[in-house]
Length: 324
Image (cartoon, rainbow, N blue to C red; front, side, top):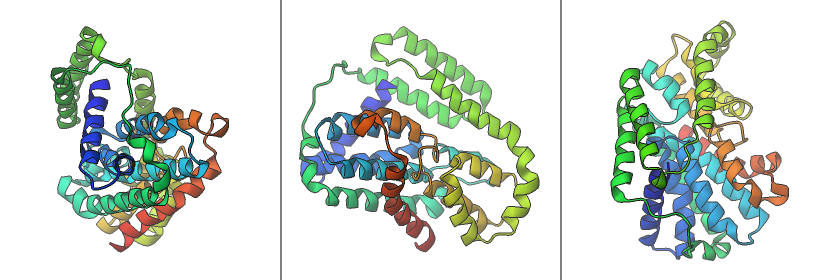
């Protein structure tokens, strides 16, 4: 929502102001490093939308090289995919398995979070240093036609967000919060952007379809997974994620009984590692493409260009998850 995006954008600018870097480089680094980590708290589509909007209206509002555009979107997609692993309640590929496998916050931080944070920082810093001569204009203030949302409205939206996270597994309370939220946004429309309910419902139906139909896939998936070791399943999941959604992959894995903890960690790590290789690899990627595509040649993000640009940050994520 607009209040959440405003609060997140203010946090980005605040952090960039105090980094010991030129303003343009600092903004670029924070958008590609700090914003993806927000996916662990406000779900991955939100930081993808925030980062894509900020990149569109600052960095890509001027003429920059095609190479910079593809490297930026490749790093963004990979970082958003792995950045949601700090918590067990936000990123869809983690959310699909966390409750069943009893993964709590400390488990996620110890096994995924700190490794993902290291990879995110390295990817963002590498891109920033590589294109440091093209980032100067990104630090310039820009005029916006939207009125500032009052702090009280931002606080209410944050409370709704916290409530959803706390009561995600209590449908009665969640539905009450949701209906109250719809009423609140209707009552104070001048401080809201139109709610993207149709797109949200499409994601919801996709995840619901996994739950309803996924159980039918256990007959072939169980013997396949049980025949692999942890390293094989990590690299297999990384590759498969490129041609299917990573949440689908982890949910199917959760249907198999008798997996070791090492195997479970490898499956989820591989699924999120490959989440930036293609547009369909991670649910938020189409949102990022929709926002940024007009800034690319012919108004489209070339699949091969995205794959090539995403390979180096994906390799960094592989090293972080398997060697650290």
